[in-house]
Image 1 (spheres, rainbow, N blue to C red):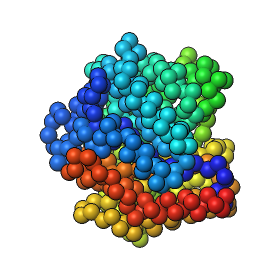
Image 2: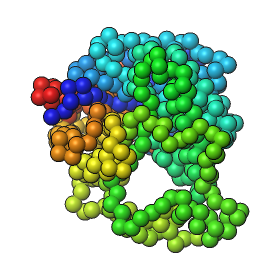
Image 3: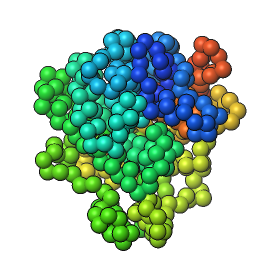
Length: 437
Ligand code: GAL
């Protein structure tokens, strides 16, 4: 049912689990600043200073990974841990040692790493120079990427350059609810998104020309997408150009155009990396306001179907069949690419529920939809990564929202990890499907 080399994984991200925010020469990232600088930004004014303390407790994470029987583990590198000021002028060898330990530890247990270069945590030093809004960031990212390919690429074969450019651009630069906390609607998110795509493309081309032949890996970027059922076509370019004109914005569009002189963006994904959590029904409307914003540009309203259960956080309606529809859509619109589902998960809030039956059911139902997508729809799905291995720092929701397959006791100095019922069930699922394949 699943191919025998199917990747059964779980994921995490550096800022969400590592802690050690100042350990061994790490530089500050925008999330360190975002959490420390002002009260009221994160639930309970919490931060990722210690979080799961994976910087010191990595071996415990490895035990969790083994207990689940994963074949793959998705982690991200902290740019500021490796290059404290964001540039290759100064390499933090302790950071290199840490990730070498993680990667070697995984491989020794027969677990393949999937490594994300950027999961929301820009070095603060680069933010101080304009961050993702500044065109020069693409070259700096490319240097960082080349450094990582050079240092870890002998062992890492699956790379993701940037996690969720849309989320990073919108929540960080338009809504201001993620780092760097900018609220510049209708402008900054487009610049940031544009530069993230340029940065990704440069890194892909570097890999392609310099490392691919010897390292034989694959590079993509993780795109988050809900399943949205449109009731009419929406074309981003023409919509933003038209809205810019209508609002008299400087006589030009707020959506930058890619220059022909730069490395091509089309074709810079060796596989499709999909983060899927939820679905929405989409209706026309919402764009009649005068204000500049992504919402008015988009001119579409998203609604929930009342029959969809909400789990933990308000945005997460549980719709496993949406994933199958989205996979099928990707097959037909993107020329049947290899797809890794790089994130998918279920959150809990409130009192501790180790016997999290609902989450177990969620994983069963969702993996079944993936199986149908492979078998009945012929989608080339190569892997599935549950989000997340551990309860962790859920960005603006702090530790109030729990996505883990392992519970982490954040009140305990040793950050004790305890398998949820859903962890046991996910492990069972993996082992059953492995025997069938
Ligand atoms: C994604 C993000 C993850 C995680 C997840 C659950 O957008 O990449 O880091 O927080 O959402 O909300």
